[in-house]
Length: 297
Image 1 (cartoon, helix red, strand yellow):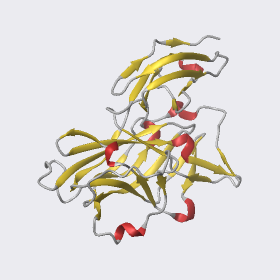
Image 2: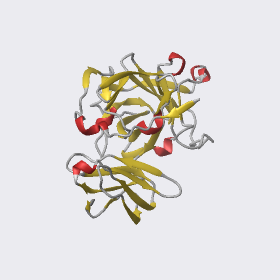
Image 3: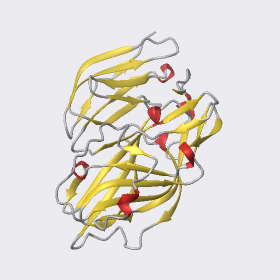
Image 4: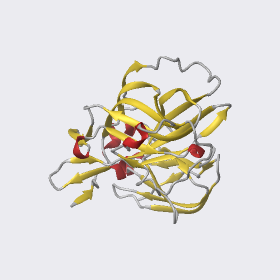
């Protein structure tokens, strides 16, 4: 039996912001070029929905996309929510279909501390020019240096059966075309739901990745003080739940929210009282600013 890890303390106080160790790994066709006839340019950004660890490091070696160069309509499929759009294996039938083309994006390969990518912070994960068509999947190849830090101790982060490729199913309609033949989207890595601790004390990575674009979703931002309340923010309604851990100055931001009405719950520690705000309206392409929250004992 596997259980989700919940820690009693908040170990993000010592978070090192944007602690990346990268080296360049670019495609032969320069990503500074504009797409030509029969081509399109894709940009993938990486963000994080946080979890209760000091750091979570992913060793990202390669990013590829599967383009269907024959299909003219977007197949919505029937793969459901974020739990079912992402898996560790790949369908080998993709390699046999002459219409299905895997192409690599230019990336900065290296170890990403995904917990530094929160509250509206992101990084460009992959960018490149690929054949024109419907983008159906993203494939991320990991190296061996995947681990998390909890209470200043390092723990290996393992994948089931030693798999190294994460496959994310996407709909072409989920990409934002911000200029002619230039598309982009964001991958929000949900740490809290993606890492499982077994009874033997091992940490297993079962990726849950939320796909969003800024035009199709909205955001909520604000400020919670004081810092020593160690606030954890939950924004929720009947269809969706998202989390935020504010920076030390109290600023927070939750992105990728579907349009609708949300409640915001602040879970406080260190003797401070919890707080709930209701009826927050989120609109597509807009940020909703919440009045500053000051917690009291």
